[in-house]
Length: 394
Ligand code: PHE
Image (cartoon, rainbow, N blue to C red):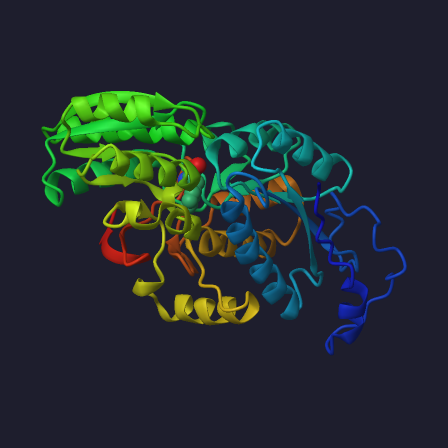
């Protein structure tokens, strides 16, 4: 059930390192948590990661983990920070509510991690955040966009934009590009992300003069959406906004098509998965969604990342979650360097002071709410691929 990707061979890696030779490799599991003891310790810096490596949103966790692992490996290849290497302890939360709390408690209490990276899905980040906050362990969500995630407390950060922005981006896109005037909204009531994004979209769209044709709910994991889609059809909308995750969205698009609904369907970052197209096939052709990153608009830094990622992960191209996962680990490492410590409070303070960090997803500045202000990109599904449409700046 649980997968752990301990850096089992850290001792041998250290011994292979041409720069420094450490002693103490015979006790790799000596607790390092909270040891702000300064001084070079041979113990690795333990960082926990919780991710949906399996289950309903498996591609979220896998992508995010691959980006995170790549950053950790690059950091370690360059000698780590504070004279110590990183040990990434990864746990699978099965895409299930209840698991993040169990896992993060274990990462902190048993593994003595000094920081936590995760999750992608907002509800799962919100479950873990109070535990990190209570234990004064900095947590960075790479890609959870619901505002409540970081509102949990001053140890909780994210390196992405939030949904009030994303909702406005898609509201403006609906108004200006799709020329929609009467949009139906179809919300997953089991997901904080979906509920929040639906709300912010509605606010933005009505503020721009649009009307909400109707609002319907589903429960993430449902298989039959026909009753709600029939109600949506009879409301005669000129667009349908679905702030959901890819598995549900693909089925919704298939069933909408079967019911003869031919108006544009669009959504947010939760759509981003190669599974969207694998499941949805031609039913998702022409749809649009907003997200955080597109390899098309690459800086040199991003181009290097794409090349290294493809090399490491069998030719796979990085998506937004991979890129944000990578940046989250790099930003954490930089904060430890700046703090000259792995102590929770000191790393927290350094994270809060992050300014203009040049990452693969652009420049990250952490604002006073511990969120990042960043551009969004809009992608369209065309010929089974995601095509870059435009960038929207904050
Ligand atoms: N923003 C989504 C959430 O908060 C997660 C997500 C991020 C999904 C990036 C895909 C890409 O739940």
